[in-house]
Amino acid sequence: MKNKKSPLKNKPLRHAGQSLDEEIEKRISDKISMGAFIVGMVMVIIMLEWQKWYLQSPPNPILITLIGTPVILYFIYIIFKEKKKIVSLKQGRDGEKAVGQYLESFREDGMKIHHDIIGDGFNIDHILISTKGIYLIETKTYSKPIKGKTEIEFDGLDFYYNGVKYSDNIQIQVSAGSTWLKNIIEELTVKKVDVKPVVVFPGWFVKMTGKHNSNIWALNPKNLKSFINSQKEIISKEDVQLISNHIARYIRST
Image (cartoon, rainbow, N blue to C red; front, side, top):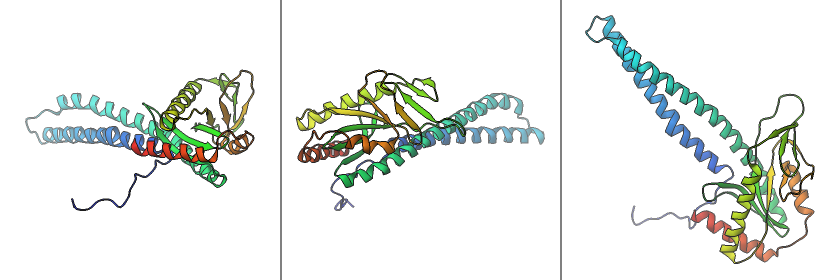
């Protein structure tokens, strides 16, 4: 097949949640599958030893049981731990996909959307490029209580989930990502632009109190378009296309 090549000129762009999909697959193949294999092998060895003992063969199963049981218990613990993590990752992935699908509708207004951009040891969930600015969008898909209040409040400094302060360094994450993206765009296009960090929480009622000054928006994704549309136009359509083209090339190259 050396005289043939793929008909695709460029690599496909990444889809929303692709990094989480890749991490889920890695955890299943590297840890759960391996753990299940080792547990199965040890159990087979133990059963064979007990069979020999029952048939009055010389081997004694007590020693192999004492050695194998801790191994089985350890890997069972690893399997259940990884399954719990995978459930969380799948929820995050599904949230990113849902937000990504919603953002695709913004293209009708001339906005450019890119998903799952790989940085230096991190990833950006979505980038939105429009005449009204460039937006880094981070999706946080948090579980909600079955009953009662489901409200997230951002005072410009901290996030509160149903009145309880929550700390997972979201502000640091999106601020650092915005700075990185701003530098990448300048490096690729020689254009200095600002990047607005946005955190969206699917399914939650989100409000910003403005108690502390912050450049970060915290929103339900359904409110994003109205927030963007309320901004002034600061980038030409030509530059929107230029920046989007360079971001697409960067994604394919990484």
